[in-house]
Image: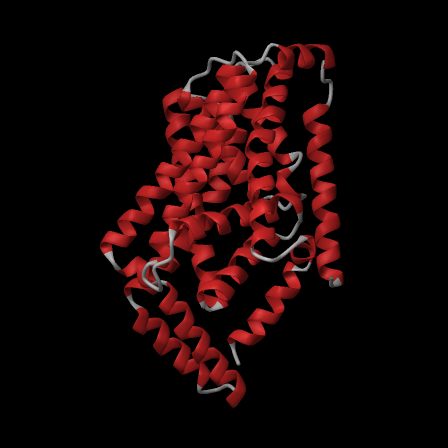
Length: 339
């Protein structure tokens, strides 16, 4: 592990600790425990099962993005999706993303660069869906809270610019190819070959965005995935006696996952609890109940994917060391991609 990675990990832990302190300050432990005891456990378990079904739907979205490169079975993509979530949940620096890109390359010969571009495209579509949820739910709920609107104003330019870049590259690949060729003319021969090779890899990975049917499928399943995940949050809310409605859960899902842009420890520890509590208290839910709900729903979306993802990782012939060494895998594959 490099010194830079160590610094990033320590910084993430500090950020998580700060948000945990903010979330748990002045907590009435007795009231929180009472909320937990009165929860409908069976409905919480049903929400956990339903959450895993949403991973199938998000794998369908991945299948649409990859179809321009290669057709891959849904069951295989579901396994890699769970491995990705598990890696991100237990280790910092988005190790899960590197693992699933590596496995995509190992199992299906999808070049590392193409898998990386597809992953960035996924996150861009996720961000736009979540922004839609926040904007629409804030309008419907007529909430005046400026801190929630600030999240939208910060995240919106990031994802809109990223989407514009992806769509431009997909629609006008010759522009990018010509620009890369122009730059490559002034580079040493080894760097010139690397630049042109990576250009071809990037443009090939965006084939799915050039086909209207595949692009429509990507957009549809992006919205469907997060809409279904909001039902997971809603089920847990009902199980705990919180009656704020489905639209409120769209707001929670949008804000909490956009807050994932904040570098923190694995699984958004602290950040998740703070922003979930912030949204619910803004909606009028008592703070102790809101924080207890945040803890429960965090377990629901963290534990199943982590356990099942680790089982799939073992099935792939890998173990814990592959998670901790994911960034080393990234370096090796990036070198291999240009040789």
